[in-house]
Amino acid sequence: MNYTGKQKAKLRSLANKHKVMFQIGQNGLTDNVINNIFDYLRKHEVGRITVLKTSPIEIDEVMYKLNNLGIDCFYKIGKIILMYKENVNLKDRIKL
Image 1 (cartoon, rainbow, N blue to C red):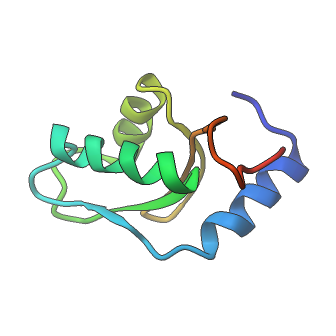
Image 2 (cartoon, rainbow, N blue to C red):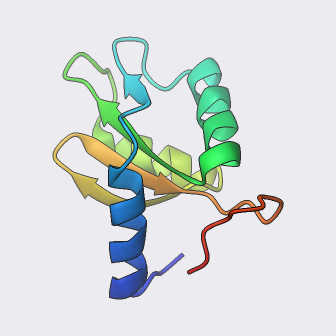
């Protein structure tokens, strides 16, 4: 999804309040990690992932795979990916 500059800024500020919740390491992007990411985003809508140097896949591949699964990777800085997945069932959901 394409976001405006203001929407990206709002999502960045919300995501940066959270600690890095997931690290993609030497096992790569496994099904278990993907399921944990979905569970986390179901509760918080925004999150952060770090791709470690030991990861067999590059950060762009991780972003591509997550985008194909329906998770919007809207920002990348260094080895950190900021991601967003809307959950309309949340009481305090993010309104863009």
